[in-house]
Length: 489
Image 1 (tube, helix red, strand yellow):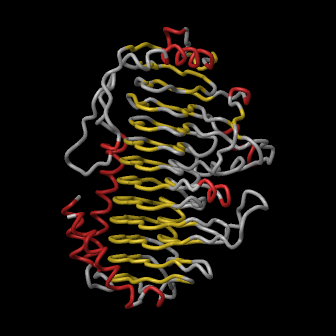
Image 2: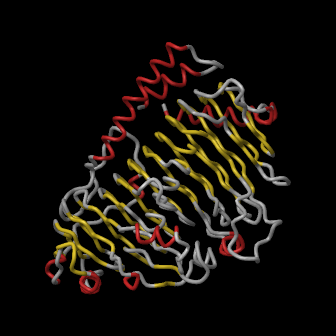
Image 3: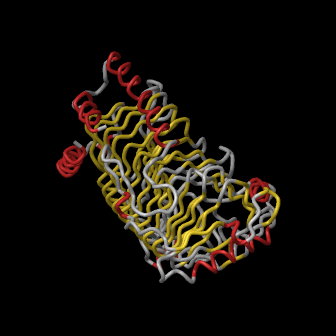
């Protein structure tokens, strides 16, 4: 991968329109890379099977998985069958899971405990995890979300949102939930957690939803968590939602939802720090990854930012949204986000920053590098004006600050729309820096559309808008982008 980056930078630097032999070679390399990324995601290998002790990470590629501090093997290992669980796809195991984890909680300060879920289909409603605990899904194990709304109780809204994201008042709890956890591992032999979301999507489509839908997995106020080697599918709402968390690693996951399933984001770090999302394949009806930090006045008041987030070697598709999104709920602030080695296909947008009047907050120091796209309509988009607010208490004078967005080594094939970069009047987006960006497939008349933005571009095709050709920004932008090239080599 490192040699590929160096080759790419050398080939693209200083050229405005690459020659056709180069493009043919580039397309071949991209096709091979796509196959490699998909294969690596489908066959994860770094988590040890059975009782989870230490992580065995590959030395072939950089990894952020070290944000999770490895835990020793658990002292107590039991099966859900030991508590009377029945994996026949029909019997409810809601109370069984709850009883098992309550029992295992007693070993939290005695070496911890591990609950194994063997092959079978284990129907259950929501259950809460405990600290110093491992949930291990063996090969062929499926945790299947209950179709009974009573098995998804209503809980309080998040304080940084002030209400449920979709409806006023409370919200349905996630299928697997954790609050104030430490040293937790959720892993297995590529077992599956299936939310059976169709029932929830129909409530949304029919406008009969009374409370905000639940997630498949929500981790709240938690630290040192590893989620790996699993398939998550058919979430009612955002699939995985770490909120107010730190040092959480998501690695070697497959996340699937029908491409028309509403709001089924893949992984949404929210008001969290030191988050690693790595080697994942995602198909969803919304953003594959969306970084958030609270909603309007509630997020501003809580002031809990998202920072130090790494998204690496993620691939997938979403026909309506973006590969990686920042916002639009970003009122607590977002900073120091790194997105690299991203492969997006057949999607509405590649990378997107979403803000609005009333959001406040900031988006600062976002680095996006080594991105490949195929049949992505609009590769780069900064948007505003969603007119999406929790209630009438939002402040129209609370505008976001956007500064320092660095995009380099991006190639998009068969795109249909040039980038749209829309800042907010009175709060322009500053320091938008791009280098080695090539967007192919556009009509000759396609032009960048920019408003209330400033920055600098180098080796970008087609030529960017005048607002991104500022000599004032050039030195600052190029210094950062050159340092990025050195760090990646």
